[in-house]
Amino acid sequence: MSDIIRRDPRAEWIARNRLHPLHAAMQPVQHSWMGPNGVIRKNVHGVGFIGPNGIKRIDRSGAQQGGAAKRTAAIEVQLPLHQVPAPAFYINVVPDMVGGRLSSHDRDLLGLARQLAGNDGAVLVVVFGEHKESAFATAGVDRLLVLDGHEFDGYSPEQRVQGLRAVDNQFNPRHWLLPDSRSGGGELGRRFAASLKERPATRVWQIKGDECIGRAGAGREDLARPLPRLILAAAECADPVSDTRHEVLPVELSTSLARSLPRIEDLGAVAVDPAAIPMAEAEFIFSGGNGVKDWALFHQTAAALGATEGASRVAVDDGFMARDRQVGASGTWVTARVYVAVGISGAIQHLQGIGACDKVVAINLDPGCDMIKRADLSVIGESAAILQALIAAVEAYRNGAKRDAA
Image 1 (tube, rainbow, N blue to C red):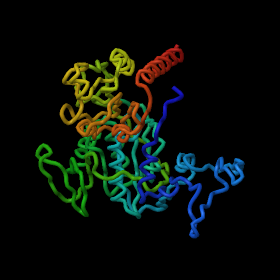
Image 2: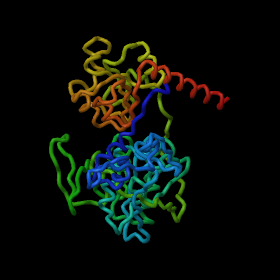
Image 3: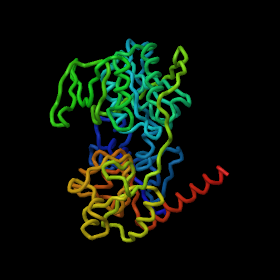
Image 4: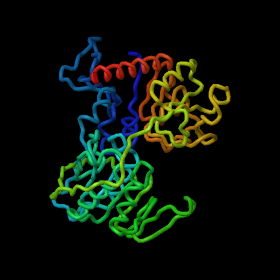
């Protein structure tokens, strides 16, 4: 497992993007170059520099050169800080926070909120319960309000609407933004709009001035209308924030929430067989391709992870998986939160089918294949060894959790 190479696609993207603030810091330091007189000049402070007499010089300053600088530049150089000491108005955002973290849809929503806020307004994010997110600063959040309490656990739309009403009374935001998603934002936004007696703009994908454009007619038409106060935005409504850093100052409600008896009772989640979940609705997909040589081990890993199995067209044509498990433009378009591709090179049809997936993990032997370029996390190595190590890690984690519970 020590021979596995992990790549950082984001660092590579910044190194290629000349407009990004960190682009210059991500470039490797030159060890040698040709001067104006045609003489080759060398950096005598380079790590492991060989001098003219064949003696190796060692850099004792502790500075990292070459590839090491490329890996650590994102830590050493910080994005410019955007501060709003006295906001003229607020743009309130209620992200889904599935799993306690910002999803790609949430980040698109924050990018849209940043556009509406401009330089004078502040983006205020309302989060229910505990969260695990640590990147609010780079996502465009100026103020953070956490509504904590057991009444917000699980499925609690009535309590959440009551909390949003209290936030609305205190901050009086210019706009409310919620994701128009199946993860809760779509329903909560419509309930909140009914409580405010306002007509929201739904499935919004673009805002131009005082007008917003949303999908209509089963997604076949665009509907333009004046910009309302409450907006339910679709995925890819704006580019996520990537060039600024924000304060994320905590704020609190000035009044306590009134306790009321809810009319809806959450009975908890129901265990579902991952194999019975339709591919288009699965949130965690473990997909195999031509690079999988041990399909029994592949099925064992998918069962250990509790993931829905998928496959590439080649694996389906070879008879290793059923036709309804095929992922891609010629199979099923998926919108999973996590998509793991094992031994899949990444044909254009397959990449089209996983275009809406939140996080993509690739396991492959070829570091130059298209799936590696698309992935958020890449593991270069033999799939059998990686799957065995993954099963062992899952079992060790579950055994540790059982011991802690006992």
